[in-house]
Image (tube, rainbow, N blue to C red):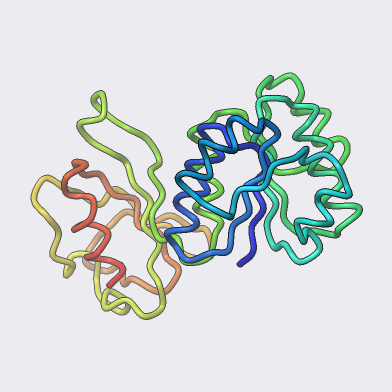
Length: 219
């Protein structure tokens, strides 16, 4: 999947790092040359210097073949313009825009730039949840980070498919709060709930148990 990210700040760099680790083709566009130099030390040639609002630069970036376009600069106007150019000039089907001032969300929606997310952490989780192959979303920290509320999507090949929730062996100090089926209906875990592909398990666990908890449902 080819994904273009506009804005190489903390949010953009974090999303780029995760997507690259997942094997996606990523291009990170940053306006500041000094910031680009820093980013290239970590990401190498996937970093491009320039203004992500300019159609000519987006053409050079191959935006016409991008499947997902993400604008996460600190300027709402820049994010709006970049997404509009991606949508209307290059016909990108899926765009995500960061909105730093929630009052501007109405403007984004009015011109058809959706979804918009104003909370930085929510934005990162939304993007990573929407990317194919991503099976984990960190929904919320609890007790000052001692616990995490997680969303775990079950892939079709997982050994948990066809099993009852109560049959899954979980790490200690973890619990299943809810099962959200692929049709969107929520179910409280019980002996009668059988897991199916693309169901999402809402679980609670300590950070150190996260990997084992995810593996229990996805491997």
